[in-house]
Image 1: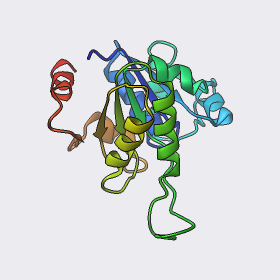
Image 2: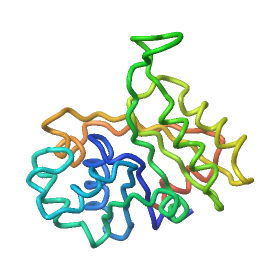
Image 3: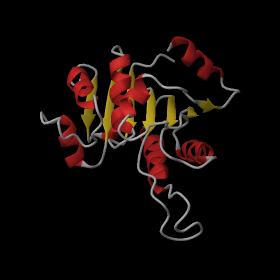
Image 4: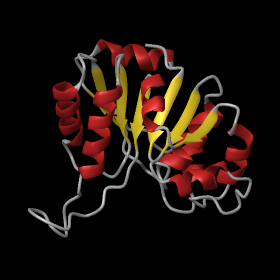
Length: 197
């Protein structure tokens, strides 16, 4: 699979800087961040990048350089999911306020909502990358949702934990001391993807 379009669901602290650097490093790939928060997307699209939704040293310069070239922001989530070959899920994972794990465990409701939306919209095979602070086995839960509610589309699920420190996220992304990606070892498509990328 050749990646031409990447969609990131979530325009916050992880999605914003990560996709900005990805757009800078891969100018031949169209990168679009989507979010249901219209005000947040409006800030990313505004000329006032000194106060973006997320402040990180160097982020505004990268956004100015890439926005409108191969880096975009939108609230049209379904359209961008449909166009993308690869989708990053970078939504909020708050602490549970109810049930088992209340006050300690991650609440995965937004991750699950994203998986259901991806399954509903997708008409072609997709690579889905979890890029949030998530507990072990979240990828299995995402795959279960995608496989049971999808339209016969095949999904490859990858985990790419974040290693970003607030204040140095851009530098961490440009010169990482490690890049960790995990997925299903039995899938030959994943190997092909990394050879081409």
